[in-house]
Length: 200
Image (cartoon, rainbow, N blue to C red; front, side):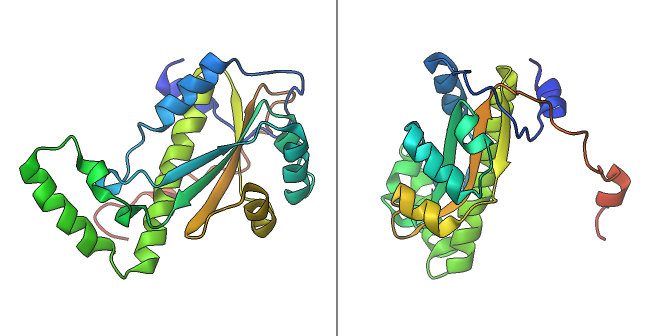
């Protein structure tokens, strides 16, 4: 599927074919594409929990207030971020850069994030937003549907996945074959309503 087709056809699908499974090859393609997503300073904040155990899936469904896609979709990914990734062996993020670039980037990274908790969290969530869209478009490119989700009890999901200290949950993403098509787009704003030039 062409990228513009995937963008146009990607929708938040709520109902999935319960019996449909995703071949390992397709899952690997989606996740291999995901980790190519861009991040500031190449920090790669994202951490993924793939929920495969069916009992665990049903506990997640309960934590998501009974939303069927959590249990029924072929795949469920809990997308998290390590807020402190910027300070965790940052030399890894520039390991393949020329030494002169490393000498500039590492101090710059520290100066940008150190002591700035809001910026650290904002950056981690931005990274998650970008990787989530990559996952959903890669899934659509392989003819799967998806649903990004924030409607769940975060504390309960954090408990279920044993979320480490310093990590945040950005969203869940359900992926699979649609049982029912998504509703028509609810009310798409016109481009001219959301696009300004140079200033508001």
